[in-house]
Every structure is written in structure tokens, then in C-alpha cells.
Amino acid sequence: MPIDSDEIRDGLNFTGPIMSDDMQMGAITNLISPIDASVAAIRAGNSLLIYFNFKNIYSIRSIAEVNERLIRAMKDEELNMDDVVACAEKAEAFRASLVNPL
Image (cartoon, rainbow, N blue to C red):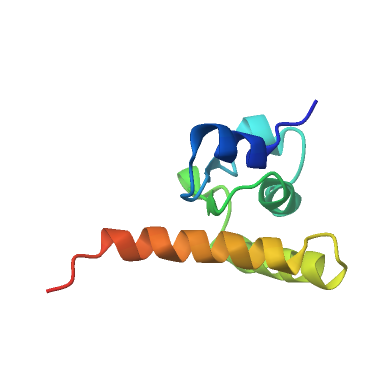
């Protein structure tokens, strides 16, 4: 049974971003490409995806490929645009909370 991130958020009263582990680690890439895993991670409720590029196994180009795949997933309605916007807003609010204005 899949984990429902809304139930977790409600149960913990958590409103912040959910962050993935490294999307290029073997536990993921042995099952699915890191590019397709990005869509699955967003669908699972992750707001931030981590790409570590350990030992330069993947090039920086892979991030552009992830962006292209996520855009295609939104166009194909594989991802709900409102959900993606909500993820982006949570990520931005988290980033803003880390910045100490002078």
C-alpha cells in the first residue's frame, strides 16, 4: 500500500517540504531511471529532489533531462500542475526561511 503524504502531513501537522534521498543511488537506479524516478518522487509528495552526482556517474546534463521529463509529465497530465506548484511553493518557502536578511 503506497504511503499517503497527505495523511503523514496531517498526522504530524507538517507543512514544510518533503525531501528525497539521492535520486541517483542504486536503490532507485536499479529499479527505475533517475529521470523517471523524479516523476514518481513528485507524485509521492516530495518537494525537493536531491541529485548528488556521486563520482560523476551522471553529468550535469541529467538535471536538464529531469526538468524536461517533469515538464513533459505536466503536459501529459501525468503530474497535476497544482500539486507541482504546491511543491515549488513549499520548497521556496523553505529556501527563504534559510536566508538571513541583513
